[in-house]
Length: 402
Ligand code: SF4
Ligand code: SF4
Image 1 (tube, rainbow, N blue to C red):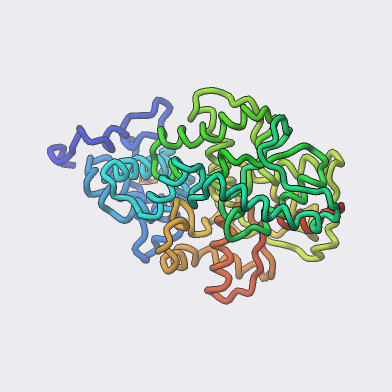
Image 2: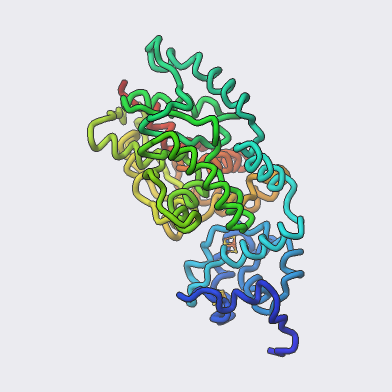
């Protein structure tokens, strides 16, 4: 290598030896094992993980930041699983993205969603008043959902035990999912609430690689939750939301929050095992395939709760091959799904997943992330798979014995 060509002052070059416990790109062997694992480049023009690492090592900040590779990367870390030197790809890509955001060259939808989230607390730009209107609208029909004329969907309830942090889709195009979750809380008999101060489980600061933004958004959740005095923050099914708020939270904010954090499937499994909730698997008398969201599974090591819950509410769980730490991304990760211009591209990135879904031979599939849920549903329609896609928690709600 001609050392004269290396820009040693570049930000990306500093990743060479940044991490005391390894994970440094100086250790890259240029073996290319990572390339063999990227599920979508495969001749389709997607990211080349080895190339991104080499560009960073050479200090080619400008070229990498200008490359579409850093936004095409799904941040799935599947390539990382086979790296003999333990180099974590999303650290490299997120660092490059952080330079892009500094230069204001980021996808327009990500930029707009971030602004909404920071200013209003919701990526879709829902104001506090609109949040209240939406929840009260859903709440009007809720008595019918649980056959109780007094039943409501609560918000801003001081001292409630549980705070549910919904996915933005549950406050927009998928209001039924919010009702389904409310049925589960109602049946548990526990005090619970939504909050009009922070309506959204997502953290796009993570997508753009800016820890200070990710920290700010995390604190927008943590502080009001602590002020409400909750015991448990319950996360809607959201892959990266789970990874940030469950797995990275303490590192991000530099302390333990004054509450525990669980995902909806984790809470429901706990309640089912302790007899707080009962489910009838006969409502879904079929075997169902399960898709591991990358951020829940490979990146947060949470494999079992969604499977356990599915086994309680259906007639068994079938595995996609490969799965768990080796699972294939749905093709919408890393912020790609949040880019409204990405639909055609996502049918390329999702082709390996569509093939995998087809191989199960099953007409039903579930996942524990509302973003994966949307992408998998679109894949099913695009590739004419005829597979119905549900979230794990919504199936639990359907099976609930009230
Ligand atoms: S993180 Fe995923 S999408 Fe990105 S380069 Fe690695 S395998 Fe490919
Ligand atoms: S697998 Fe690891 S060591 Fe091999 S080229 Fe990729 S980043 Fe470098």
